[in-house]
Image (cartoon, rainbow over all chains, first blue to last red; front, side):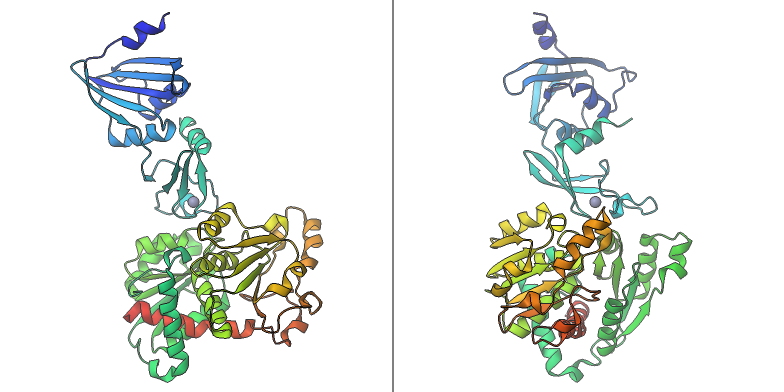
Length: 159
Length: 305
Ligand SMILES: [Zn+2]
């Protein structure tokens, strides 16, 4: 199987994002702002067998340290993901991508009558996490809920 | 403690807050003159981005009766808003003039945004389709005055339970009390939203959704009526079909308890027929009149504690 060498391909310093739901790796890279032109060495493994998820994706990025806001976005799209921080070939930190309690700024409310959808008001959309499994965010201004599908659709359709 | 607080949604209010307002309103009704200068030198700004003469006059009367002053944004069509000034900048201006800001707006979350911008307390006089907290205070206060209690009562809410901001606020406010039973009476298209249902379950309120008033009228201690708007129906013929079933008439009240209290946030169009006005059940004019003492109580508690 070609799967094994891919999985063990080691990085020296950087980040491994594991347990990404199958097919989401490219969207997550895009959310992190990685286009391939930054010079990072990036390995993407897609649709491999996983005991937890059935199939999963994995991303390895040499030389990258995640910012907290990146972790938040990853958590929204891949709430099961594990983030491994690698230093000198060893995993020095392992954390779960947990959706933040408050999500501010990068998702939009679905409600056209919501004040956050008015172009001339200086207001950032803000959502409160009402449920983690299944993921559900509630607009802090109009209480309309975003489901996981709404969130995924919004994050994946970003240019 | 309500001093200095924003009043944006019923969800921010505890039972204790409601009771504090009710006690204050009792005191005001007992001796109105005692309070006629308690807010001297205080200024209330009213900013009604959506017109509502009743609510605006009720707030303004309340402030004047407490010895305070009132400034008003005026008709939005004629003010700078029409020239493209946004809500945020308008609120900032009012914040620098007034001690408390009362806002009404068509959009969901407008009052919350205003409260985030203003240093001074903001009172939501109705925004979007969910929040009208001072109306809920008045509704509950009226029930408490007429029945002597809220706990244990069987209450019916009739009409637009989906988009009606008064019905939504009323139902949310009921979750702060231990009422006996709640009947939600509406056409299928205008049933309460899922999150309202969740709220009721969470609060442990026994409720039933029915389509016809006649099914439950004999049980009711309170009937809260509201308007069903034509615009809520994609198909006008659908509206014509349901509207008749939600008009309260002498006939539809047959078998009602002697002390049934009918409330309505007013204005009404044709959802309560005039013949009901002369029955002992009709308490909506009394309810409207209680708007002033309840808002006086709220303004007093917010501004001077
Ligand atoms: Zn919203």
